[in-house]
Image (tube, rainbow, N blue to C red):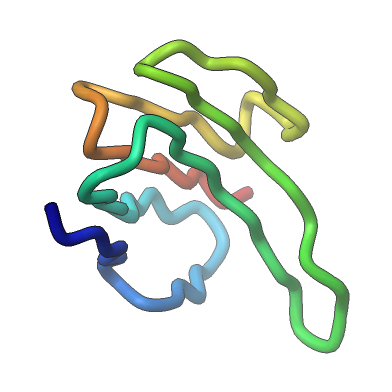
Length: 81
């Protein structure tokens, strides 16, 4: 089986009050995770899913909401202030 990762959009810049969604698809993996990086800052861990179960969440829940409809897709809902 081929493995791979796709993400749309590749990056996201939002304005105040906007709501956006990013999609990530993993092929051939049971684990899904999301990192974020602010301009000129280091990567920060956000979410980790293992077989559709949220294993770890290190974000502000009111700003970022993960959704894992199946073991190959992870959606990130972003609510900007």
